[in-house]
Every structure is written in C-alpha cells, then in structure tokens.
Image 1 (cartoon, helix red, strand yellow):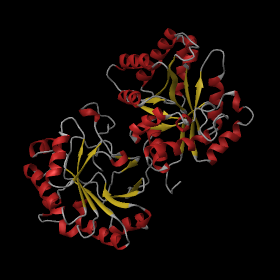
Image 2 (cartoon, helix red, strand yellow; image 1 turned 180 degrees about the vertical axis):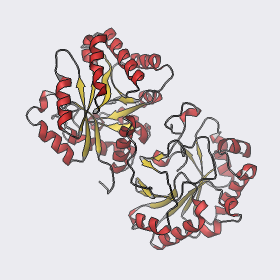
Image 3 (tube, helix red, strand yellow; image 1 turned 90 degrees about the vertical axis):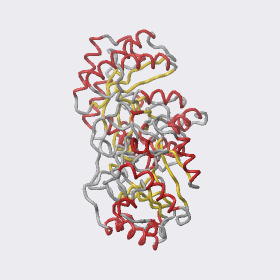
Image 4 (tube, helix red, strand yellow; image 1 turned 120 degrees about the vertical axis):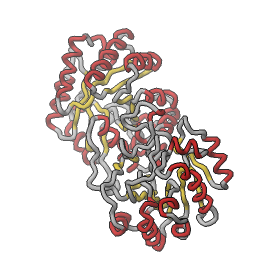
Length: 486
C-alpha cells in the first residue's frame, strides 16, 4: 500500500462462530498483519445461542474488532418485540456500530416469510428511531425487501449496508436509491459472478464497501476453504480490477465510506495539497471559487474519492513541489479541486513551468473564468505548459448557465467561457468541455455546443452529497466523474 493510504475495513465477519475456536487469536493477528484495521463481527442473536455474549467478549479484548447486533432472518421466529428490545440495548455499547444483520432470506426459509418480514420491519423502525446504521441481508427476496424498505422509509434515506451484495446493476441502483451502500464479498472473485461485477462497475466509489462474510464465501484463490478477514484484500483487488482503479483507491474509499456510516470524522492531517486517483495526481491549488454551482458539494461535503479537500490556506509553490515529488511517477498531473485553479494564476504558471521541465504531463480543470478574473487573456500564459484543458461549461446557453453555475461575474460569464474555450483551441493539444448530468441541463445541447467549438465533450456523473434530499440528490467528485473537481 502507498504511503498514507488508509488500512482496510472488513465490514462483515462472524468471528464468534465455532469455525474459529482453534485459532481465533491467530485469525485476528493475520488480519492485522494483512493491513485490516477494523473487523466488524456480526452477532446473530438467538435465545438458543450465545452469539452476542461471545462477540462482545471479542470486542472487549481486541482494539480492531467492533460489533453489530441483530436477529438474522434465519432466526426471525425468535424476534418477539421483547427479545428484539433486549438485543437493541447493546446498541448503547460504544463498540457496537450497526444494528443487524436483518432482512429477508427466502432461499433457505429457516423462518417463515411472515416472521422474517415482521422482524425486518421492527429492525428498520428501531434503527430509524435511533438514527443507527443498519446491516441488511437479502437472498431471493428482492421484491418483498424493496416493498418493506419503501414503506418503512417514509420518504427518508437509510443509513446502512446491503451486505454481501449478489445482485445485478438494476438491483444495486434500487438499493442505492434508499441510501444503502453495497458491500462486496469474495463472491466477486468467482468465475460466474458477471452480474455482481457489472453491479460493482455501475456504482460510484462512494457507494461501496468490502467484506469477507467470514467464515463463508472465501474468495479465489482460497475458495472452498474457511474464509477469514485477512482475505478481504482479495476482494479489494477484484473490485479494483472491475472499477479500473488502484487497490489504494478502493481501500481509501471503502474505509472512508465505513467511517462516514458510523459517524467518524475524516482523518486528515492538515490541508490535502495533492491527492492520487488511479495513476493521476491531482493538485488542490485553492479552495476559493468564482462559481456557486447548484450541484457543488464544496461547502457542505468537500470530499473527493475519500479525500477531504477543504483548504484553510493557500500554500506556497514550494510546498506543492515537495508534496508532488517526482511527477514522472504519475500518468498526469491535474490542477483540480473544489476551487478554481486560475485564481492563483502566478502559482499555477510557476508550478506548470517546474513540472513540465521535469517531464510531467499536465492537465488543467477549470471553470473558464480566468480571463474575467484577471482582465486579460490568460491562455498564452498557460498554453505552453498544458497538454490538456478541461473546461466546465455545465450549461448549453447563457440563461441556463446563470441558473446552474451562478457565477460571480453575472450575465457576461457564459460568453467569456466560450471565448476562453476558443482561445485554447489550437494552442493546447486537447480541449474538452464538461457538464454535470443533472435533469435541469440538456446534455445533447451541451454536446452540440462542443461540436460547434470543435472540442471534445465529457459528461460528469451526478453524485449525491451528504444531507441533500432533492435536486437529483446532489453531486460530487469520486472517480473524477462529477462536479467540483472533475
């Protein structure tokens, strides 16, 4: 793992089960040695089993082990209101992070369907009442699951996980519409897992987690053996291949997603000057901006691919050079972030000059306001160094632009962005207009505008922001597909 990359969270295991009686301590140590910083071990409560007691003993003994408590669908027949209330009291323990696993399992039907549905409803109601994250299990019961989720949500989003997700992209999309994150297990590594791989590919990085579901579902190359948390790295590798990102990207995002679910604050040590996504390095030059886009998460939720990009200062060029190191380690250096890089035109040009002299490929992501900002055409100053410029147009005409981008310069801004784009054509090798895909913007009209200007066009995915409940749920930045940083 790269320096500074988060350690892995196994978001679902069952360490209390007898399969680990002979070497439980070794299993936990092997996980730690493999880079697993947290194991969520899920107690499956039942009057006939001591799962909660055994799980809590583990939690008390091991710093890296945390717990979830609930009644599994297999045991739903025991889920009387009184017993469930007894189980729910464990939610007050500081190391109990989730309620569940609950849900529906119509494959084995160890409990009658009506009992499973009743237990699932009670779990959801308790979790919503206490604002507690929940873990959901579903097997061969999607329609019933969605009906209950819809009815119990009362229009609100859930904070929780659809664990060991084994559905197709359509099911993943429906789960995500309820606010749930999909957790992928070793099944993703199986040869017959095309639907699951396509589902993973369809999701954003902020919508996924990784797990082992130990001792079950061991990933290749350990398939058919007992699973354990150290094997979660195989799931990380498989997910990275499917998403066409690095394992560090998967670790960073899934760890951040888990922390966000349980209410942990992002762990950042000072301002993030540079941040890696795939094999590109992004330069976070400023947090200031000349636009107030309706879709931007800058003020509410400045997170991009697991990084908190809020800057409290505008660091000097020397700090960026030190943070970047050898730029040839990366396929490109991208000036990006939630702020507008051309606000710091002198620093931008100096960085470009130094990095280009070191053999770097350079890209600028900008809102195109630079000429208005500085009262001159800045393209001749930046063009000698740039290999590519990506310009956020985000609207096909001036009227729509004012409503969506809300620029500080007012009505003249849209035409100025067009003029900036024209000035880039022919002097910067690759010029691309981009727009966030939101209902209020005609993407086809944006494409036509790009063709008229003889430049490329790229759609940036619309990503929900934390706390948003409308406007298609708000956007963001993971995968560098969406607003603010893309």
